[in-house]
Amino acid sequence: MHIPDGFLDLKTCIGTYLGTAGALKFSLDKLKNNFAEEKIPLLGLLGAFIFAAQMINLPIAAGTSGHLLGGVLAMLVVGPWAATIVITAILVIQAIFFMDGGITVLGANIFNMAVVQVFAGYGLYIVLQRITKSAKMSVFLAAFLATVISAGVAALELAISGTIALDLVLPAMIGWHLLVGLIEGVITVLIVSYLERVIPNRLELLNYRVGDCGVH
Image 1 (cartoon, rainbow, N blue to C red):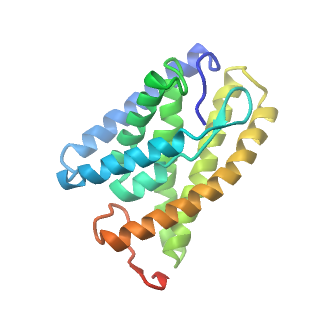
Image 2: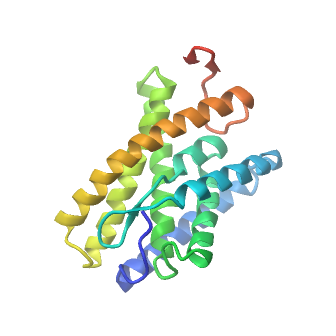
């Protein structure tokens, strides 16, 4: 999902930086009085796992790559505001120290993975909880669909920049991330279910209980 330097034009870089800055300010404002300090160790552990998962990249098209994102997992565990911040921190470290992505496109990469995926997953999860009786299915579909949506947004950015035609990049990005989304959905369900067993009532956005026979 990381877009490399030089693949987006100036207007797209500036636009995504502005959108990202607004989302980060909003998230930080929300966190000021709404984040429990006891969640900091969990946040660090979560960040380390997502960082490692995102470093496993497979090339797709026009210099982009496919990998697990982790935004919905973070959103479910620590809430959307903290999830946006932790994914942003991961992407900044990757861009500066590992040259994964780049500085000029950092705003776009943060926007796609720390804003779009997190908040698309947040909205989807809330809606799915209302229309399905299966909490596992809500978690899975939120992670799956949010991953595909993020890939679609990245494809649009590349097309708007004139890097590659939309009819080429969109099928490539969506097609690959249908598979990535399936894997992400399964992993998210497994991790969330495990965490609900070992630290019940500590996960930010879950309103279900996990028993020996599954999610009720």
